[in-house]
Every structure is written in C-alpha cells, then in structure tokens.
Length: 373
Image (cartoon, rainbow, N blue to C red; front, side):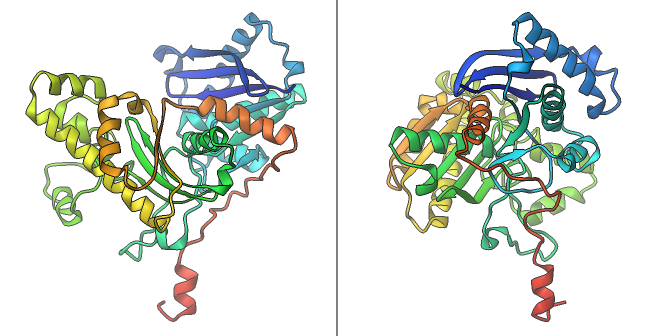
C-alpha cells in the first residue's frame, strides 16, 4: 500500500488530501485569509506560510510524514509539455519560483511537493499539468504567421475522466478515441486519440463557445475595432475575454443554477443566452469529432455544470448522433493526482522529466527550410 499526499494550492486556499493507494482517507480545504496573503509581495513568497499551514493540519490529523511515499501536486503555468506524470526536478522548481508561471498560485504545487519530499525522503510528482500540449501540427497553425495555437483547458480532469471511462468499460485510455467536454466557469472541449490530446478548443483566450465567465470566439475584425475604439483599455478587453465575458457580461452571473432559475421564471433573454452556449458547445464537440475523423468511441461530459440535467439533456439531443454520451459530473483532479503517483510507484508508468523547453518549437524553422523567410 502506498501513501500519497495530494496538494492543490489555489488563490485563497490549499486543498490537501491523504490517500492510501487510490483510496482517499481524508481531504481538507485550508483557507488563507486575504490579510495573510496580502503580506507577501510575490506568489513564491507564500511558500513558507502555506507549508506551515499544511504541516499544522497534517499534525492535527496525526499523519507521520516519514511514512508517506509521495507528494503529488497540481501544476500550472509552466512551459508547454506532454501529458503524463513528471518527477519534480530543479528546472521545474526554478520555473515555479521565477519562470513563466510564477504569478499563478498553482505553481507552488511542485515547489511544495519537492520541499516536503526532500525533507521526508519521499518522491515528488506533478500529473498532467495545465500547460500540457500534445496537439498535432495541423491543430496549431493559424492564419496569422505570428501566432500559433497552444493547448489550454482542463487536461488533468479530462484525462482523469478518460481513464475512468476506460476503466468502467474494461479498456485502456490509450486504446480509445474520445471527445471530452469540461463544463465549468471556463469550458474546454478536446479530442483524445489513443491517449493523446491532439486538439482542443478552449475559451480562455477567446476560442470556441462562450462560457459563464468567458467571451468565446467573435469576429476578429470587430474585436480589433473595439480595441482601437478608445472606449476600452487593453486590460479591460482582456477581462472581457477571460473573466467578465459570456454569461457574466450578458446576465450578471456565472452560476448555471441562477441562469436556469431565470429561465424557469420566464426570462427569455437568459434562455437565448443559455441555449446559445449549449448550441456552441455542441458545435465544438462535433469539431473535435471531425479531428478524430469521426472515429469516436464516446463523448464524455464533466465539470461542475455537468450536474445540470437541463444542459446535458440538450447536449445529448444535439450531439448524440456522434457516439454514446457519458456524464461524469464534478472534478476528479485530486483523485487523478494520487492515481498518477501510485502508477509510478507501482512501476506501471515511467515518470517524465521537465526540460524547461516547449514541446513544439514553432513553424519558423520549417518556413526557413522552404524559403519563406
């Protein structure tokens, strides 16, 4: 039996869970008051504070850290890397401290895991980081020479759901072709081909459908006109795309339950906003099915909004022709972090090493070789 402590630092709290093999023994959500976090100039400066809060809780639970086999943590904001379980190395730790993702609290994850592991003789892992990038070249190119697409979404939960569905059907995730839609404050839809996320549509920076807090795609020329209209600053435009768009802009709420209550009370505008989102999600799912050339074993729907029977029912009606639809509401991130560590500890999976270099270097070299530069 392997003992794993899972760490998931967020903006105002840190989720900590203790597992024996794949079985969760307990989970705690440790809140961090704003006045405490306000004492730290940078995210990385919070590391000693969060460590102490975690240690105090584990001591209360009478967990002997010297008997822990691994610490497995969420990881956000690093350079693009493939999916899998990574053993936290020096480069990953350094990038968490001052690298590309050092302004996100999720990057404290690998740092916390490595610090605890070094102090106890355990191992430190991250699993399917948010910067996971397994896209095929055709999914990366855009009509702008200066821009390429990268994979943004919910890979940890999506791959966890893919593995769960595979287990439920007596198969392996690496044997299946799946379209997986994560429905939450942000919505991402991805094509999973034999264990790789070969394409993904994510609304974080303005792709795909609108979401509760995100704008989704819009006519680019019109967006450019807005940017240069003098009415909005750069920060205001980015907020419209990533934080204050979608349902928040139209209806003043990002809560699916509130929107459904509005519809039930006769709010026809809320109904068209809601129906448009479902319509657009369906189109994204169909697009990912096309990326898999129509060879789809199942469509999986997950995330917090997957609890909505209304939305799931509408989606099933729209895209049920593609493949069987299965619903896994909520999130499985903590379980996925523990399961990834256990797979490595059992010898079922070889851990990867973070190189600090993007997995895809871009098209510039190819352009040079063919005389376009």
